[in-house]
Image (cartoon, rainbow, N blue to C red; front, side, top):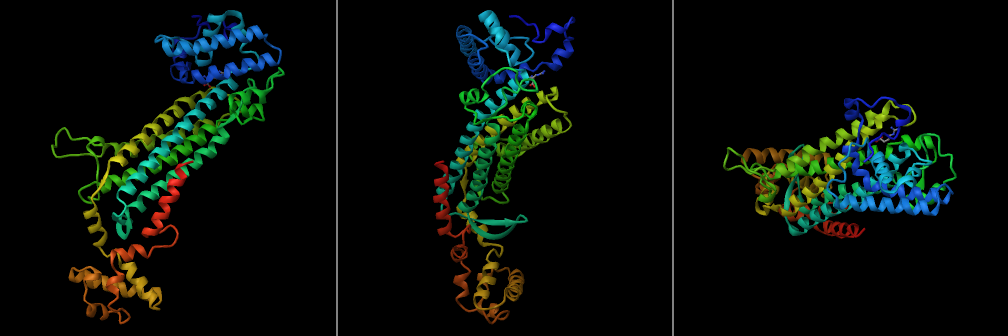
Length: 460
Ligand code: ARG
């Protein structure tokens, strides 16, 4: 195949091998092949409508592009090339296959609007896949929540036992986070789904190409409104990396919770062997590697987000080659997010809650102290006064090695006369949970509602 550069005319010397290695992007941007072929076909139709290529030439070009697409799927050597980038690769292949008609394809476009268009097309598809994978992870979370419908775990603040919550309530917290991630993804999609093609190199195209028609054919909702911005805007990539970062941060927190919960110290959940690994030295070890990788890989995605911002911040209008750096960053974001979501779903699906131990943990350590303060408030005591009395009761309990519900009524009344026998019932785990019945609380009835709306949101 003809390896001449697209810009060879003005040059008398060949690129230095090191420069070529440094400059060429084909080894990674070939990933945009299908998107660029698709955009090229739409561009060709636009050229034909504008009277720039004949119907015959159009057919030859479309046929040639379709052939390249087909060959790429079956020919193992198809991508063996020293092309500079995917755009020059496709053009050279096309000219090789169909001759002169292929040499007309680049009329009215530049690689600058071309790459921005192909990149957005590619990202659009990936965002669709990622949306589906987030849904799958949400479904896995909902399944385990329903599987351990009645399990109770300690809820923590400052990683200290705070108040009991239903395990399902904990699950649904992550469901909510992922729900927002889907919303953010859908919103970012609106700004990805805009077509820069027709911006030319920077100033717009001098040919009467109906950009909106081309956009429609490619499924873009709109066309960019300023050619300088069109070729140099990478907001969509940065925004996606930002959305991906928040998503990964959520997966990382989920992972961190589960890493703690499956440790011997917590012992609230057990991970499946299928997502754990052993130690080469210590025979007893079962390590939560999948979860640690979720936590670890989040850093990569944050890094790409920061890297893209740094790459863009000093660029003068319009296109600059720095921007070629956007590809590997975003490719890796997408790959990392996809495998992470798949891994998260599997880990969650296969985890088991140690219900007995979790209940034990949720009832030891004065997790019902707030409940007792609320009990006093219901008897007309100001909360601050109640808080202090219960604090003293906790001290008494600590002193005697007893939970609040294990103190005798006389011991309790020695600190607060306002407490009666009915306190023992009020302090039970069931009552403690049931009382949290305002919207968003962990009472079983609220959690049942939350299940319903969660299932509902998965239908979308
Ligand atoms: N490989 C380039 C990129 O990713 C394509 C655009 C090149 N344009 C140019 N004028 N050199 O940004």
